[in-house]
Length: 125
Image 1: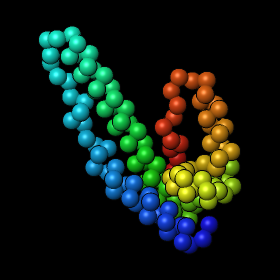
Image 2: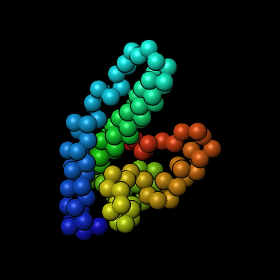
Image 3: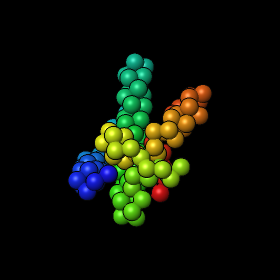
Image 4: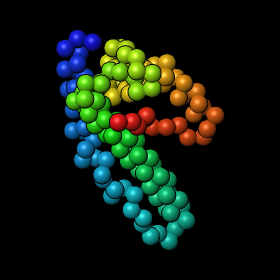
């Protein structure tokens, strides 16, 4: 990975943090509305579930971007947290916050494949 790539990855991660920093803490959409109508309660419950999931995903993306920026500061960015091998530049270009190389990520995905919920992003460092 050259200095230009590294700089582009840093900019992308900083943009992600800037974008998500304010939105990850918003919880207005998950307030509970008291409604007498069964259909309205059902609709509000579905909207609340979607809002909660959106907050979870945004929060996970924010944590992953911040962790990647910390790895940049530590000098370990671009190194797989699992096998200590370099993460491919194409993978980092697609997912600048990637903490695992494609081989290790596929192993994680395979292990989680039999479960109902998938991990949002690997959280390490």
